[in-house]
Image 1 (cartoon, rainbow, N blue to C red):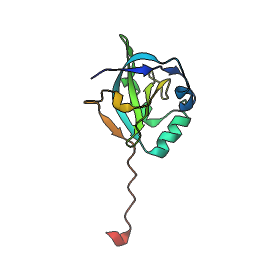
Image 2 (cartoon, rainbow, N blue to C red):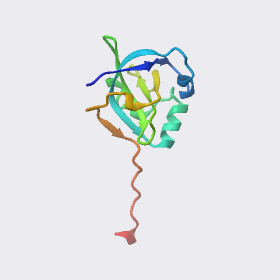
Image 3 (cartoon, rainbow, N blue to C red):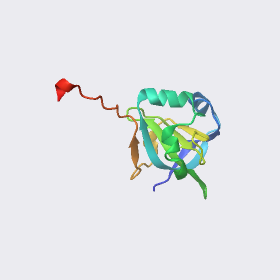
Length: 131
């Protein structure tokens, strides 16, 4: 998978995405987005405000992340409409153990990165009259 170098830093156990944006110690870091997790705007706001909570999309992908040979393998959590996102290296846990804010996800090389769409609205059961 393609690697990217971005200016930023990973925070250990940040509580809220606002903490990720306030840091002034950005430096070049090498990352590899192993999966693009697409949430709804409401889901993303909830996740951003609760980074230390267990999240099902992190649980399902927790074995894909980690740090190896100077590269952080992480999930990109975003929405289809936002330019920004949050990189997550959960280190085998069910929450965002290490997280970094990405102001523009287009700065990441996302070629061939699989996308999980959690932003799809659940289907409504059809009524008897619709059948």
